[in-house]
Image (cartoon, rainbow over all chains, first blue to last red; front, side):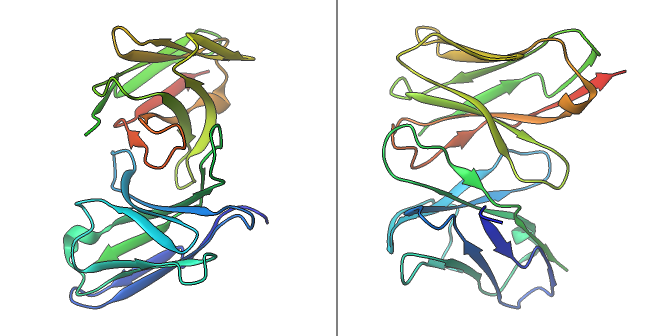
Length: 114
Length: 113
């Protein structure tokens, strides 16, 4: 499968625990995005990378959230000290920089904080 | 920042009829407007997009229109089929390189056989 892949697809964790999600973008794509989607809402932008550089972060990305893309390939999104309000689907997407290039989404990682 | 509003939130149409979903945006600098289809538990998939230098784009049964003056754009699906049932999201960005999309709240489209 040459699409965007995310792991794990589902995660249930207790409040206060840390969780980490991984995203593998389409291989030639240099841009990688993280979005969050809650039930009944559209995806909300969290952050994006061009190669290994994190170029923008949303105000939604509190200090408990950190994203990395150390080698410009896969990315991780870590949430520390999870809260029930963090329960959502975390979507990763990738694209090739330049005008007219489509953003492709992964299947998402569902997080449930209990 | 950009704000995108989408209507209606739910839409039911008879199979074979047309469906129209409308979105408005706030940032006059927005120049790229994609539409995504999301089936339950699946990823959002791009179905059509339009750039601010054109007013209409069509791809088989799907078309999108853009009115820059009024800052609204619409998705039109003709000859609807059961497999068109899904949630549809509009989005907008002011950056031609698509760095950050602002999404609408979605429309749940149900096609009645």
